[in-house]
Length: 169
Ligand code: S3P
Image 1 (cartoon, rainbow, N blue to C red):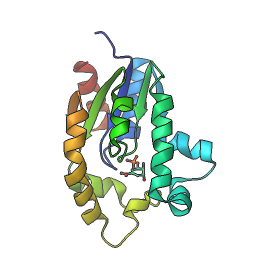
Image 2: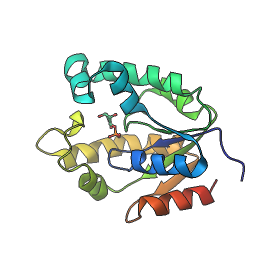
Image 3: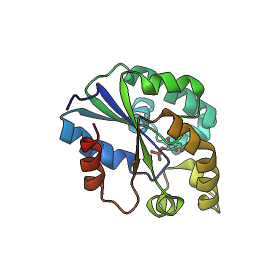
């Protein structure tokens, strides 16, 4: 098995990017990086605060700068935010030296896994399911286009997803 320099996980909110990323990094002996958490640490504020004060545009600027910085880090597994694929200039940064894995997840699972979540500003409204559906329609083709591997995560434990991923590397 020849390991990629970096593994980059993309996919919607609730796909399991952070959980699976952390486990995969451990399995590969790589460092785990979570772009949203690092943005929060650097900013000294959480994502809802950033959206509130700087708007989604402000958050996207921070996200692009973070993806740029993290694109240079080898021997890493990177969990990205669900919207990281929205800016065309991010695509090169996500692909750089990386095996890009799309964690593909049904709307039902996304709803289930993001229920009662307060840290995702895009879902703080009356109908989070409708939002997830709309985002998926726009983003699924982009995740698919960028991905080297598409891994379905529905009805699978994170451990099984990691095992299947390692087998495909
Ligand atoms: C977002 C997903 C979130 C976070 C932000 C915006 C999106 O990350 O980056 O709330 O646009 O889908 P997760 O996918 O880790 O929830």
